[in-house]
Image (cartoon, rainbow, N blue to C red):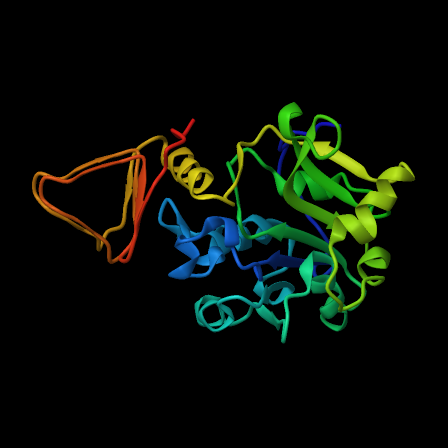
Length: 273
């Protein structure tokens, strides 16, 4: 099923949909970048991934008080970064996984339907989440996917990090380490109840340095992304690269297919597509 195009403003009853950004992961595959900041705070075209995720959900919730972020790795830094009205769900002493995160938020969700998104994905502007939510039956879990036969999660469809979960399903999860696919989506798919819709929006999972660099170049239209406070000396060359805030590129240096942070340089040998 394809997501319909945007045909006008979608109105929704206030307060009927809660939004959750999943941001507790350690970002092991994104190492060494995640030694310097939590994965959710890694910037794509100058905007931290968690801010992009919150913006993704805002069209379908009634203000920031209807948004939550789960915290574990880098919790204190994320806590300081988030807008005051956004609800924080600290997971201690261990991260609870995607289903456990929902279970821990059951009192806050308070019987509402839930929209969930991963903090570590980049989605282009083609996703109209209001249209996705407006066409949802609120009885089946709806997953937003892209066509990707090579890496499909459901046949040729690859989950792109946005899900709509009915209140009854969201209320069934326990606050124990567990994953949404393992405790819910696999069973629903086997029963023919999983509602899969497709989007033509560009999608990149920023799990590795190569994909993180690719997301930056996609978001910027192909230009290198250099933070405003980065120090770039005269004569330095920067091609297809990302330079973080506080980083420096020396005179005569040629930075190509790379990510430069204040502490490390990651060279991406797989040329970004």
